[in-house]
Image (cartoon, rainbow, N blue to C red):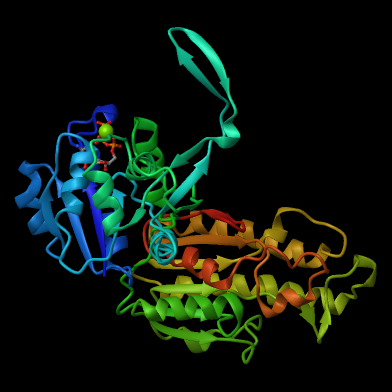
Length: 431
Ligand code: CTP
Ligand code: MG
């Protein structure tokens, strides 16, 4: 059994805000709620305990009825000790997390828990990217930054390990530090964390968090209530389109997918979808082959017919999709295009493919401005190399470091709600 402890009893003095940082709301949601949701929804977590200041306990009990709320202490260490002492009987592992890190990812929670099978403590770390010096009474000494690591949260522990460390008389700013002070030979597993999982500490951190939350493009965006939303995905039978369809269906949307069985580029092809209201339309149409032959070749080798047909499939289909959106998204909604990172630059053999994708970028931006007053949010994701069937056609050596269609679908979901419009999101491997 795994218990999660979310530390929310701090005062946030460095942020200099009246309200402690974990209770500040962004887009109507409390910063604390992001972490709570990530742990409640995690399949490996059995209980979630929020540690809070005494005066906040009653309010939090109402706001987070699924959680146990307990009293914190004067220091973070006291708060986490109180948390550990209140886990339910039978708990084997605990995962401790700062409420001030709203962008915790599902993967880091999974990694923390899974590695406790073979280790006594786990957690994410980051390298220092800045130079470091040690400072004593105005004298500075060089520090080799390669051996200095920043410890983030969540931190996983076997219950007996953390209890032993907390019952010693040692003190530390974090529980990993406490465990390694208590037992320098402890079998600890630290893995590479991600920069999005930063701790809101200073004013600038809050600004950055606000930006990520407004855009909905952060890794902790696992849910989206899409029930009763009517979604049309053009180009939805393969790769990315299919992954988006699966994800939106999972969130409760009524999804209609259309693939190559209709020629979306033809003038009246979308008429059959014009008689109903759509909330979300996604255009994930694009070819790298025409008549079963690759279009990735020099301009010299491309003939007129090939050129005009591909322009129609890759670009005119997008124009027709805009027209469809104008007719059918009458109460506000979302139109999302999936382009390609190839739009950024033309190169040998990409003259045709890249130029259609570059044009798509401009089309989506222009249309976003045009329909702002109609409350149609228009955005574009340009994914870099993605592991789809279509990828096989791209030159050798370009197939390593691929994005997964599921990752593109995750980001795509962010653009299916909210008020962001006119955005071009360049999605790279690792984003
Ligand atoms: N924390 C806690 N109990 C304390 C102190 C801190 O539960 N007595 C929690 C904070 O709420 C935060 C996490 O530990 O989620 C990390 O601590 P920190 O960033 O230092 O938060 P604060 O102590 O609130 O901020 P500051 O140090 O600027 O006052
Ligand atoms: Mg503090």
